[in-house]
Image (cartoon, rainbow, N blue to C red; front, side, top):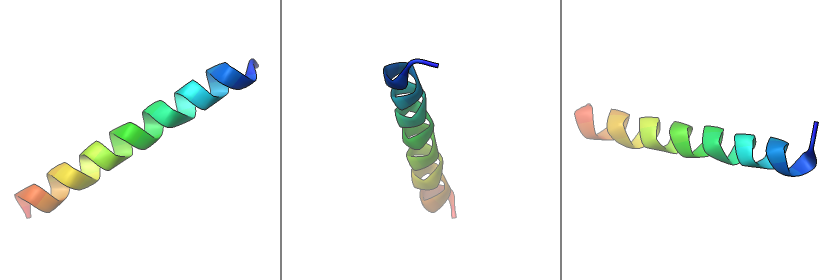
Length: 28
């Protein structure tokens, strides 16, 4: 697996998690 591809995938997961955390804090 290419290192940059793995990094991009990790960054995408982090962004999604941050978005979910933000939405959760807004709805609660």
